[in-house]
Amino acid sequence: MDIFGDVNFKALVFGAGIAGGFILFGWQISDWLYPFASIGLLYAGYGQKNVLYATICGAIASTAIIVLTFQGYMGQFDGFFITENGLITVALTILIVGAFVGFVGGWAKRSRLKAMEQYEKQQKIGKKKNKKKKANVKTTKAKNGYVDKIFKK
Image (cartoon, rainbow, N blue to C red; front, side, top):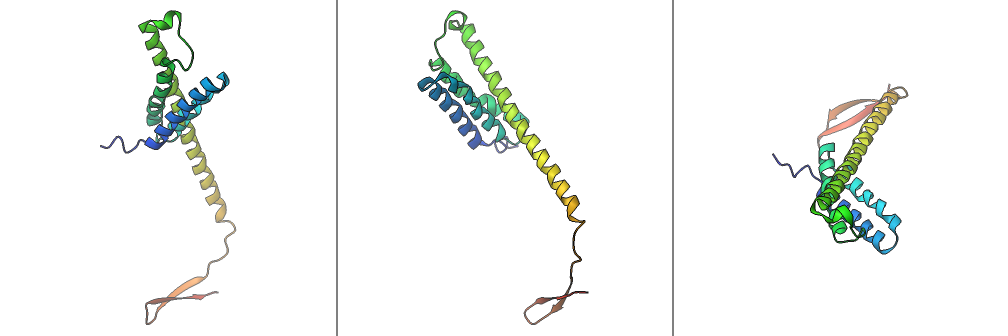
């Protein structure tokens, strides 16, 4: 069983990069860019084949946010968050939020695929109503192979 064949690594790497990039942009430019890091986590989840892989890849992509947080790009820690329990709490919180956002991305893809199937099914129903009668096709054997001759009634 090939478990890595179902994971879209391109979406995972780009999603983590987008998430980390928005954290760095928020640190350099303005604090209101921090929430846009979730776009990368959504992309990491949306690129996967099912919701389980989307959830896992959302959590994996959020590790870039954890690294940047511990390096101080999201501000300094004080109080409870300086202790080991506080650091573990911060890491787990970011992982859980990353997994949830990845799940939302995978769920959105699943919903979009279902909507596309329903739309195609609806389009197939309407096609048979206005079809013109097709021409009868009779084949005759020629020197080079089969030649189609069309006879309309």
